Length: 440
Image (tube, rainbow, N blue to C red):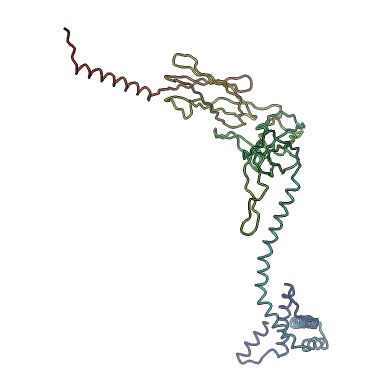
């Protein structure tokens, strides 16, 4: 093709042509053959016969020989072989022109045909795959766990329940224990439930008791030691599944605490409808509930915690009445979780005890702060009060104490009483000014 262009330029400039008519036909034939090969690769009908393919190979052979001669090397073709190759190109010149026209026609239509096929095929295949997976999931996820009915659970509450909320065990290195986690479906429809495990850690934010780490590994990682037989299962309404969670502590585990959670989430099994394309949409995740796992590996561990602050919420000192909310801030700086507990006592201005609240144990993870809120209320509060909290650290029988003083001044009732007395006094005074009593 480039040879033809150069020849055309030479002819326009008035110089003698460098290509004969036979050579022009041969070059055009080479271009036709290349176009035909592209058409054959796309799956369309071939436009070259066997004779035309032989002509293509002969032309390439002549070109290679010409290049070698120009470089000063001996030719690999004899005069007889050159003549035979040239004769092959001159046998059927007409089919070559017809092939060129067909190639131009199919090449012009090729982009539209290929693009149309690429746009239609993926959408159909994706829809079929989605339907196949859904049917397979519903069939394979039934009966994977032991299921029992819930007595008196015919009513639809619209949620599901996971229990227990927390598992706290002590396991030595190399020990294994199985804990049953119960999942109860009260949504009113069949559901597919997913089981996953995540690590957990405490937080320096007093209002955040625990942080789930998702795919990240925590400083007290346990998710590699928790396992369940099946990660997905199907559960009907008013059914309860018993999931055995295996805790396996490696033989080389170091002493300390391991913290994580087994999480249960659910999606709707039945399709709610179809979109405009006929696809069945998947339901969004409704909820995710977990059971916390606290595992203690015995040995030399660091237990260090203390009561940091105690006051009313926002350190408020004046109230109009109850209820009174208190905040207890506890800090754990050790390497294992603690479960502090204690009591709250309240005395009035006459040093009489007017209130008592027991404080059940609550957990505080290592290297974290946790705020516990408690509320106290009583009728007819008035005056100054002192609240004292006593917290046992849950180790070595160490108790911390802090006190906080606040006032309860119900100014509205007091103001109403003073206003009433003032009105009565004013009326009495006005009465004596208007009437005058004389002695007979």
